[in-house]
Image (tube, rainbow, N blue to C red; front, side, top):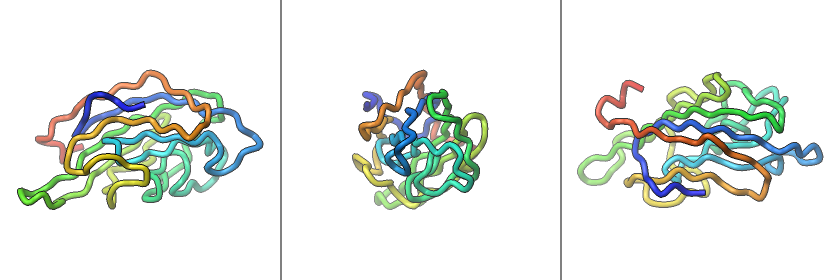
Length: 161
């Protein structure tokens, strides 16, 4: 699913539910993702019960940052992400002056705190110097989404969030 609207800085609220796949493990267990600007993935996965989450677990910025804590609920329970995204900044020559920043709150707990991303994550689409859509990834698992909404944030003063 890809939004028609594109975004620079924005706040996203999304609810998701991972399927119960007791025979599966790792990335085969309810795998999906929320792509900000179509380029930066917040992992969706059944990571319930994992003591120390890694860079591929639920809430991770895929292959860049592991969540600070595992805030996952059991499969089949609805969970929330509240995400604050600050788009990369560019100079007049189109060079990145500051990488994108992201804060992720899962089920009321801060799991990624104002992390500066190294660049796009795998599976990204589009050019990093343009606004991009919200994209929900499909990996063939029965991950459900509901109550998805986005609030564009002003570029001015965005260094305060």
